[in-house]
Length: 533
Image 1 (cartoon, rainbow, N blue to C red):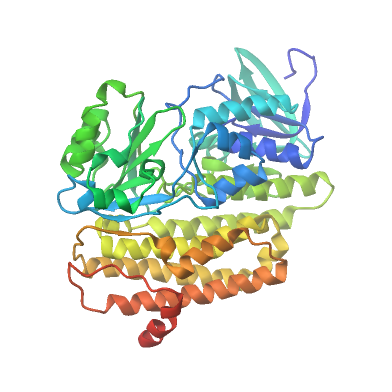
Image 2 (spheres, rainbow, N blue to C red):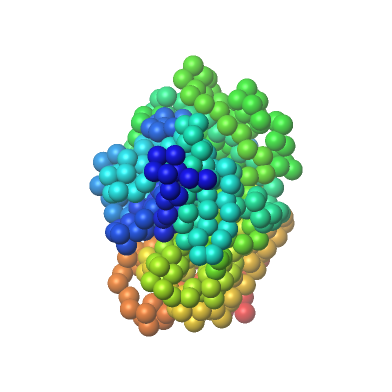
């Protein structure tokens, strides 16, 4: 099949199937690194897309913030056209959930110097779509992929654009089609996961400020700048969490994420059902929503959203990025992190292949490492939702998960090591030890929740005030050479091991509802760990 306009089949270095966030970011990164690369991006939606009511995935954390701001050089757009994020904030179930000031709260008091953002996906994707075109990338909308035929040395993609059929060839094909998962479905690479949860979400055309939900002076004083609303706010209960995320377009995103067994999908699957569910589990939030029912812009629902894949990268020069391959969970906002990590690996493979290197063995290694990281992330969520409302255990889980993230996962990304396959191979034993400790701790936290559900009264904790956690986050941007980075990773893992043993020792101590939550600082870790040995 020939291009109707030229009479020949155009040839590219890579064809990207999907012009959403993952595909547009990959195209931008490839062009930054190799200005003469020939790219075709095929997006089925018409552009520009609507702002606000478009796609979920509006919150970023440190890896994604660094990827967008520094790696993709989007800092100006992010600062001027998106909202800064005041970290992640949690309000735990107090049995009534009618007054935020009565609930135990965990969250930061000020913005971190490691920037992260609340993203209006429509606004960002419109910017990337237009900017990629100005960079000379062949980006097409209303282009629906019909067939992918693998070949050597070139693959062939047929697609329909505005009712006309075309064909193109490329050395690489990258699936960025999101949940459409074009290549995964074509090759039967679907892999089920044991994490069974559902989500519903909607946007309202108003800025809903959570700071206005209570007038209590002491509660307001915890976050004196009045910017709680700029956090990704979580209302936490047994088997669920509810999000509130502000968007730069002045809309607010609401979402409910719940364990399928504790909160079955049919009880949430329509807007009226989700609002009724809020009335039962989060009545203060339901009362707030009553004032915005005439401003609802959209509603979407997704059952069993987590999904796996047998393979995401191939030495036969095809890849999957974004949600086309795997997806874990929206808690902790890891979606854009996986876009950044996956795109780094794909850029490395494509660049080296176009330079004439044989990347088949390295593609296999990248595939194993990426899927191993996915499986490790799944452990954060699998069977863990029942503890969401347990402030005593969940606060320690948040501290543990963030320590692992800042101390290992994000540190590797900030130093661009997810594309350094030789360095990653040299860390194989280290990463196995880390994943083993991480898995053991998730099981321990689950067991702790099962035996101790003592409720907590009102209170406030900023985990960044805990010495070693604040230090791990602040260390992300320090310039480290390879040897120093290796030593730092080992020191961080030793610290996490001591933290794990300290938490296990704490779990054996008698508790009372009035006890304050105390997470050991770095100076206390050694003595607590020794007591548990």
